[in-house]
Every structure is written in C-alpha cells, then in structure tokens.
Length: 308
Length: 223
Image 1 (cartoon, chains in turn cyan, red):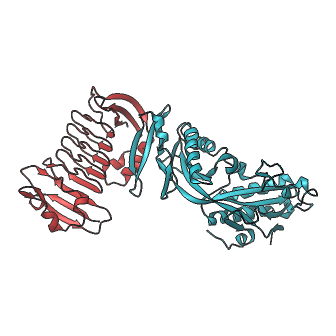
Image 2 (cartoon, helix red, strand yellow):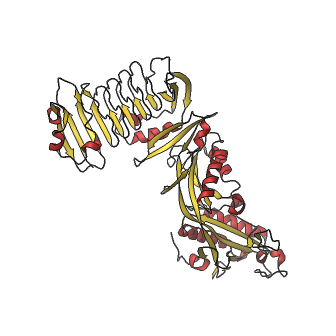
Image 3 (cartoon, one colour):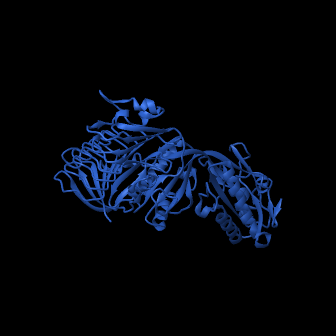
C-alpha cells in the first residue's frame, strides 16, 4: 500500500486494555484552565514511569461546562483502577486545588464512579460544604465547596471510570529529522481534532521507542535499536539506507474505533507531505502480537474498514 | 408518572396537607385521592378539586388557590416536585428529604423546618423561623423573611434576595463571587419559576447558627 508515495507497512500496532477517566477543568479564563490542565497532565507520558498517561482532549466552550466558564477536557489512563484512582486524587490535590480559579467536574458517566473531590474535601478542615444539585437531566450530583485563599474551590465528588485502550501507535520514517517532525506535527494537528483520544507524549510525539528487555539485567525495556537510524549496519535494522529519522505517535482512547479513526487521520496527515518532502514509510510498533489484547492493522484502518 | 392538580376550595379552618406528596399520590385515581383523609373529619374532596394527568413524565403535585390555611405542604417529601400557586401556611417543606418545592406566594412560619435535602423555593415572603433547625439543602426566598431566620440551622443554604435583619448568632463573612451558584442557577433554569431569572454570582455570605453547629450559610444575592 502506498499513499502519496509513502509506503504503508503490512503490520499492526499492539495495544493494551487500560482504565480511563475524563475530567472537565474550568477556570476564570482559558489561560488558567490551561495552567491547571497542563499541570495535571504533566509528567504523564507513559505508565512505565509516570503511573498514568494523560492529555488534554479539547477545549470546552462556556455552554459545555457545568459552571458556565471556559474549560478543558482531560483524559487520563492507567493500567489498573487502583493506580488511576491514586493518580487522579494526587493530581487533583496538587494541580487543580492549587491552581487559582480552577474547578473540576466529572467528564464521563459510568457504573464505576471514582473519587474526584470526595477525599480532597477534607482539605477544608471542617469548613467544606456539600451541595447536591440536579443536572440538566434532573439527576442529583454532589459538589464540594472547599474554602481556599482565592475564594472557593469547587469540585464534583466523583467522576466515571471506564474500560479503555492504550498504546495505539504508528511510526513515521523519513529522510531527515526535520521532515519527520513536520509530518508528525501535521499528524498531531489532525488527531487533536478528534474526540475521545489523547496523544500523551511531549507534543504528542515520542522519539525514544522501546523494545522489551535489555542487555542489562535490571532494565525491562531499552531503545528500539531496529528503528535507530545511527545503528543501521550494526544491528538487525528495520531501516533502509534512505531513512535518517523515525518518530512515533502513541494514542490512547476510550474505544478501539476512537483509536483507529485517529490513527487513520494522523497517518493520512503525515502522508500528506509525501515522498517529495522526505516521508518514506509508515510502520507501527508491536511485540509480535502476544502481549497486547488489541491489534490495529495499518492497511485495513487506512482502507476505512474500521470506522467510529 | 402522573401530575396531580389540587385546586383548593374556600376553607374556614386549617388544612393539614402532609399526606399530599408526589410519591404518595402516584398511581392513584381521582376518587382514591379524593377519599384520602386529611384529618378525622376531613377528606381531600372536602377541601380540594382533584384532577390527574397520568401522561406526565414527572411526579408532580400542583396546588392551586391555596392560602395560609394550608399547612404542612411538602412535609417530609422524598422525591418529585410540588408547585404551590398561591400562599402556603406554616411548615411549608418542613422535614423535606428531597425533591423540589416551589411556592409562588408567601409562606407561613417554619418553612423548611428540619429540612435535610432538596430545594424549597419561595417566590414571596417567608414567615418567622424560616429554615429553623435545617440540616441541609437549599431554601430560597425572593421576598422578605421574618424573625429568627435560620434559628438553630445546622447546615444548608438560605439563598435570599433581600438582606435580613442582623442576628447575634449569624456571622457576616463578607461579599464573594461563588462559582457554584452558576450550577445552582442552571438547575433553576429547568423550573417554571422566577428563580430561573437569577444570575448574579455575587453574594453576601453569613454563617450560623453559631448557637449550634454553625455550618449553615445565608447567601444574600447582590445585584
């Protein structure tokens, strides 16, 4: 398969079951909503070292938020419910509670509701106030008002936790680092327009793809030498002589379809630059298909065989 | 679900309306409701015209033409909505457990007494001891309030349009813009009530009743 001169490998991305949640963050204006959301989703690129993978899903208009202020929706993923709950509470306490004018609300409904401000309320030292207020559907929701130095911190008591998928990915292989980065930026711009997904790495792009294991016994993972351009000729390389740079986009989403649709949009945007601009191949990262529960096959996805 | 309308007949005595809750009247026919005893020698048919709309999506009881003689409206209500088009007597919404109670006229004494949850919205004036011993929930008054406002009130919110008389056991916490009010006002927008027109998030906050727990609040809306 070739798109705009770019070869599409006959391979698949291998992804895993995760637990996910969505939080709506509002503030006096978008500047402060971003300050809160950037803090909350900071150091959340990979579950390996950060516990969770998180990112800003999209901006919310004043009509879309519970308190009528501008806001952002944040998605957060973890390998299990326990660590997701722990990380959410920690990040709520250190990043949202602390941020001037910020408030937090549930962004997803589920049978599994986890603490958003349920325990954080004790910061109020007895002066916290609970309010139960019906939403647009008449369903009662509990909010906590916690006195803080800038006024009141407002948070909903819980948010929903759902089954989700993490680790959808594709690799962009090109003739130069600058050209590959430009293609990845185009891909990220396209993917950020879609709902229910986040790309958790810096700017949505990761340059240090890893393989399982290492020559060092204590290391669980190490550099993906088969895709390192400077090791061509030294290791069993996946790269031909033209490739000087490889970057990866990892995508987590609420459903298989969400990830497939976003991968399609991202790959098509990257291929839009074409062979003439140094984009040579699209591939994907997997572990032979034995570790992950979900396989995102590039060619069927790009043929439109998976749709949301 | 059904919507029950109770149109009050002229009465020369007080009428205890505590049996006329949305949850209690659901599924009942006009005849069944008319036969409900309100006192030893008083049935619903003696003091109300009854009509039932069984096609309603919500459990609602509408009181019409009521006066200060109609007491204990919404007493202990746990769900649904009561609309009072008229005045109400003492103990309006007392011991409210949940749901929404709207009164377009004036309320008597002890409105919201020992209320635990839900919303009691009075568009007219409230009598003495409004919100007395209230434990939680939201009680709004667009008119004036009487003496001993929030007497013994433990938790909950009194949302007022007019500044009440100063009381020794309520402490002025100053003027504030509270974001949660936007969420509360959004919930008002669903209601056919003058409360749906409130938009100011700026309030004067009082805490009390310091003679007891002292964790309740009075919020006086500022224009």
